[in-house]
Image (cartoon, rainbow, N blue to C red; front, side):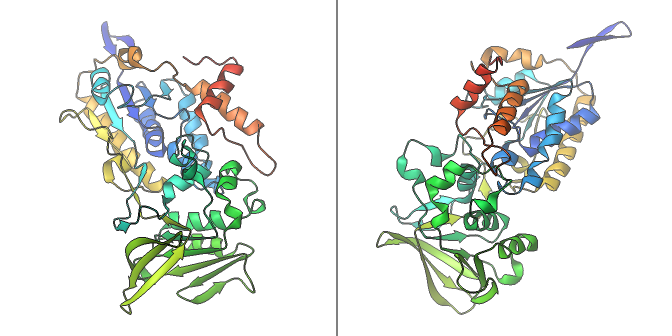
Length: 406
């Protein structure tokens, strides 16, 4: 992309962003404001943009998901391109981007559940909260949607959730809700049916820290307590629900977990109550870990120490922040990019330099809009949309709408 200024041929800055989740999208917005002439290309391994916002945020928190409207606008603006279904490290390398773009921003987040860090019996069923939420959010890439039929078997009548943050609350709330409680959401009803979530009768939330150091927002606990048919107790004290609840949620603080064993076909979480130094056990059909997230082991690594590569969000901090934190970090990253490019020669070809490396089935923003419209149009009763939960379905709908899938 060139323009003539005072008789000289100059180039616009070419910036690549790896990851179309909140951090990547907020960075694109901030770069548009700071560098309106820059060409920004946002790559994502998924066929759809918005990452965690689409597949990680709880399906019944549609107000938070509405942030995607801001992101839609930036992708619709001149100079910003979405290149979906393109994995950096799978289809092309970070080195390729480094060679083709004046700056590269890595916004790959923290896609994997943090390992529980204690001994786990191989027959005990342990799931990561992130994977569970992605499955319920219709993520085509969820491991629970894999070929192994055992991966998405029913959760059973009781689960233990390990963790004391908002994700633990999300899991407890979503699993406690009936289909009617989820009216207005975009939950994947097929996933809920596979998990047989409505058969759940007991949830134990086990937190390592004491009650006064809980990490979930008070509003999250209040939302759980207000659900009809749900009883909530904290360290044995009933705080919500009268009579016989449909689902009993029991919160246990100050428990140091030691191991997940297997007994009589069920998982047994063993630990010690730190206040009394007494041994405790929680027996359940499934253990769900909600103790944070980590980067992929094969996440892009800087090939050289270079001022052309920047990191933002979880890829930079190692912490999966909320949307406000993502936005603030993105502004800082965009300012760093703008400052660096203000004193550097702009000479890279941008997307044109890597087009020959792109996979056969690239999804652009126009394709995403076709998918988006189709999901809304096919919404089941009581749902704001019914997502496609396979890549093949998305490809088919683009083709059938005369979209061009490169």
